[in-house]
Image (cartoon, rainbow, N blue to C red; front, side):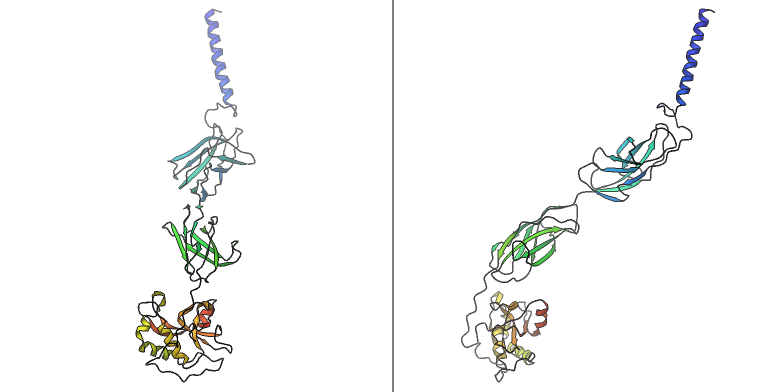
Length: 402
């Protein structure tokens, strides 16, 4: 055989070996260099488990975690997952992608993103399984939303504090930081002790957008010490309590100086025969006509009857004095049962059998409509039941006049 023939035979054997070895290699389904899909291999779609479709995740600054139910395969090659997260359903704006996620044990795969998804957006995600030669279908697409965390910082209690010159304080706080939520309200707790075991009022008001929030509870007893604090809530998340402040209401006003000789002569008003009715009777019927008569005879006194704005007691004194000419059971009313706080527009009638002074068995009658308004008018409204329903009482007082 010639040297040329031997060289040609060697070349042929080499080529044959290369072709045959590659064919044998491609026939092995686990070989990493398999080219193209392997016939007969079926890969199922994975199932997205968490976050649940349509759920909302609160941004924590940590990468989100996804949970997937693994795909299955009829082949023998190892599967891994490809994952896409996008801000649109068509996956044209992909914000996260992982191309080779190893399947977890027990049929599920947990994947932690490499960086957190930003708050304020909805995200769409899907995944599929591949084995290097075959590609399974994508899972169903699911969406979730990432929202900013709810922040409700406690407000700062500002006033009232210390000794007051009023018994009608306005409560004021500086608003705390609020974000990631709406509809926040502040709850004011008012107590007579520092550990808030004796609450006397709980008042909830919407947070004012001006930066501070106020509320009032009306009149409080004089010379009484209170403690108060505030916290915020949106119905689901509550803040811590604010700082606690204490205050003491004003001292009661000095008793009025008695007017010598009563209200003086009453002109132009029909007067009664004097005397005192038996105990247990109802509200006398002559009252409305007496108030109307005093108003007609002394219109200036009625117009100037707002003592809170510099007015005088003349109209009240004239009405009480006129009523007492019919029945000495008539007198003044102590507001909310306070003998040192005479009402400016309510008279009292003691129907009980005991002494008049400080009696609480009284009918109380409002005799001035629109008191302290622009046009006060004579009235006669029995407020006894309404006062009792409000948890308060009337008290007969004389203002030191009789």
